[in-house]
Length: 294
Image 1: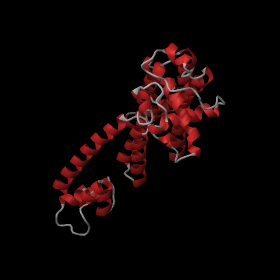
Image 2: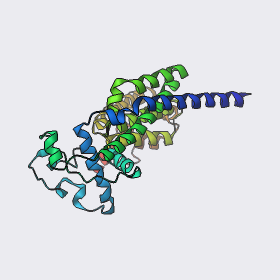
Image 3: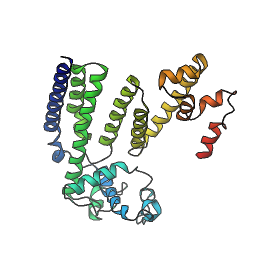
Image 4: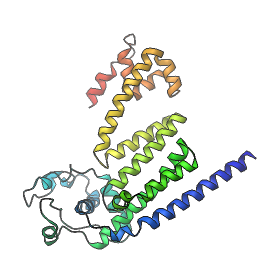
């Protein structure tokens, strides 16, 4: 009887997810061709050509010095460091899988207008632009699914359905969710990290903790802003960890949070517990070791 109820609930979730996918697709798909071009799209599509350089992993194309500064702009001099690469990879793979071919357009110069950049060959083709937007359309649909799962976890099915519909139908998503740039991937990774954090809070496991860290790292490989967020979360986590150790001791804390040994918890937290516990002489101060690694 319990298995039948569980199966019925899974089928209901699947039906809701399918309905969300259809509604979101019908809402956003027309925007793939109707949304006005944004110059940032030319940057991301043009930079996705970096996929060609995977054949030469040690070439200078992976750093700023590997590109000529034709027009003397700061943008050209910092083209590799100014944009993390993950969205470039995703857009490039999406364009390639749809048969539009990796781009060969030049680097869009922000200090010049659209006509100037078109005349100098910096505009991607319409096929590449459409293919890049379709790629992000898929990412946005996957984000809607994640938002439903998050809402279902923290509230119920109705809450998850409402939250997913609000996101999928929102006018801002209509503008940003299909353009060929990094924002759709960033929102997807934030949603995936949120869902993973919920699972970790409900059932702490090493595998979930590693997955959460991986998603935060991928967010940093998409946009630089998650690195600031991760740093703030890390400082907050260290503060809460130190307070818990002071009031409850590290052994109960390890059992309650992760169910792991003391030494593993110390390694996970960067060694802060050991530096606070001066009676432990088993191994060198891990804070000093961590600084040495950096």
